[in-house]
Image (cartoon, one colour):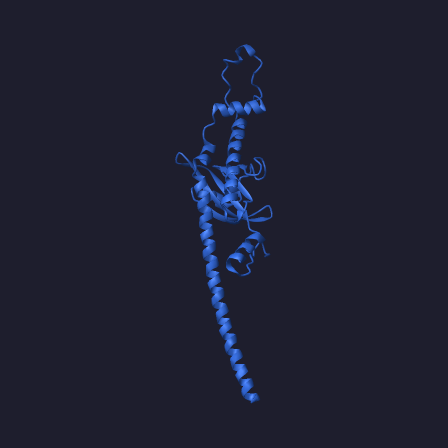
Length: 238
């Protein structure tokens, strides 16, 4: 009886071990395929959202010709540029305002870009699932230099040529929307970059970056019912 019982236990133990191992492998493979498919879909949605914004007239308008009203408003705030005579009251009313300086044009462009980055940030914070707020939204010129960003018009990386750091920015400035992953200020960012067209030419790009953090893994866990971890390679370390 003992021998038969032990033999039966070993047989059933081996059978169910293999059975449950096979079930676990099938489930993991299914979950992996679902995870990949869901992330691919989210990537497409993310990229399309940024592409739609880059094609909006408001974003294109950042690079429109500067108006006299904008120059007058800027000078009312900051004063006339150096070297311009303003003390001749007799001719002041009829005098033609001097053309905008390069610095004034940069300030106006930065103000426009900052307003659009802020508007896009508000839109994404409302529309994106889970109310995630982007870590970075910025607009670059046609060379890849950041004109302005969302949080502060003068905050880093304003003035930085991102095309020299990230090949994905170069691709975007050649007219291709791109998704990439960046190490940026000790963050790993999931980034979408789309070109800005004006009159048939690429004049700049708009980019959005989300920090990949514990919150992302937790959201994936809630969606799939399985614990999720992300491993990132930086240099020779994970």
